[in-house]
Amino acid sequence: MKIAMIGTGYVGLVSGVCFSDFGHEVICVDKDPRKIEMLERGEVPIYEPGLDRLMNKNVEAGRLSFTLDLERAIDGAEAVFIAVGTPTRRGDGHADLTYVMAAAEEIAKAAKDYIVIVTKSTVPVGTNAKVRDVVAAANPDLDFDVASNPEFLREGAAIDDFMKPDRVVVGVETDRAAKVMEEIYRPLYLRDFPIVTTDLESAEMIKYAANAFLATKITFINEIAALCEKVGADVKAVSKGMGMDGRIGNKFLHAGPGYGGSCFPKDTKALARIGQEHAAPISIVETVIKVNEDVKRRMIDKLVDLCGGSFNGKTVAVLGVTFKPNTDDMRDAPSLTIVPSLVGGGARVRVCDPQGKREGEHLLPSVEWQDDPYAAAKDADLIVILTEWNEFRALDLDKIASGMKSAKMADLRNIYSADAAAEAGFVAYDSIGRVGLI
Ligand code: NAD
Image (tube, rainbow, N blue to C red; front, side, top):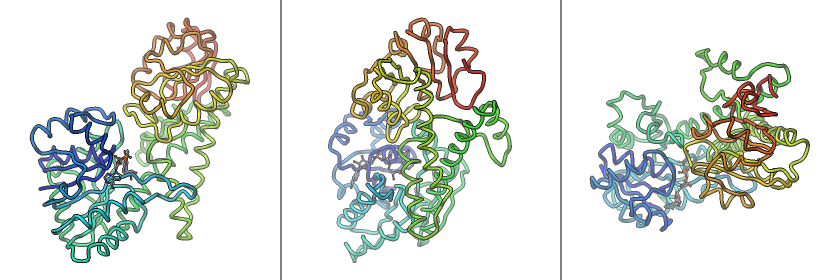
């Protein structure tokens, strides 16, 4: 089966590589010549564990290739996937569909034979119908169907998520399109995963509802954490006790510095906007968006307190700036709020992140980059753990504390404990939603 994939970002490239690994012939298209040149050299433009190996294996097997030429990519393809960005539109929170609609028009102009146009990008309800109308208007003679196939992979674990999904969601209007989609995902059937086949609108809604629910769950535990601090409870114990209830589940119940990343912030805003436009406001999600901003502000208050009321003249070491471990993605990361307030408050900021430097250098000006957490903490007044990379989970706390000017730690991922910090010589330790601090 021949498949074209438009967009070689976190979703398009992973999906294209995995489909080729299923045995399909895949051509990935991007508008960005720099990305295509890198991919043709066998280099992966993003950091995603295992992707370079799997990509090069399938290129060598002759099943995977890259091009700037959409017409060549869709020639003879049974399906073309749209996996371009849908960022927040400036000003109103709505998902910006410029890239999706541009891709739809380009497909319409280039396609000759029957093809299924599949939207993998996260798009508001009604977008697939719009894609159908745009294509039909641009090429009235084209025989085609549209399908919605939202993606649920997580950056950092993207290959595993794609290969072993909890479910695949497919929204279609015709049996013919359903058959093509079934054929594409057939190799996964061996693993007996569920495929949820719906209409277009429900498939589009599933993606937003799922992401908004997860963002709500994280925000819920973040607010419970703030209350734990006031009443003397330990949020880690609370999460554990809650999560053991099968109706609740233990995932997404880790208190932290607020959700970030390329999906939750923009998808919650887009869902809130869709609700408002249809006079069916999703007040709970509107509140989640607001509370998440409060959570990030509360983190800054913690850091100010640890610095004795002001950042001015202090040296602060920040460990981790990507929105989560195992990715280089910095989109809407909490670091983009927290680090500028440190710098703005007059602190000298040293930053260490295993993969964040390439993006972070543009996004976080006026900071000093260090490859080594111990060098970052040397002579610092405060160390802040912002992203729970494995590299920061087993630090030699004695070594960190003895190198610091004043050994104070803000552990915003609850990796360590007050006891361990005190034993290592820290004079102050704060974390999220826990008691027994120093
Ligand atoms: P991205 O910004 O990493 O990649 C998008 C790519 O599309 C870019 O390389 C861009 O150059 C390319 N592009 C844009 N217009 C094009 C065109 N007309 N022709 C060819 N290439 C074009 O985006 P992403 O993170 O991969 O997200 C893509 C979509 O998937 C979004 O809607 C996002 O919400 C959704 N999604 C993302 C994730 C994630 O973890 N990143 C997970 C699930 C769903």
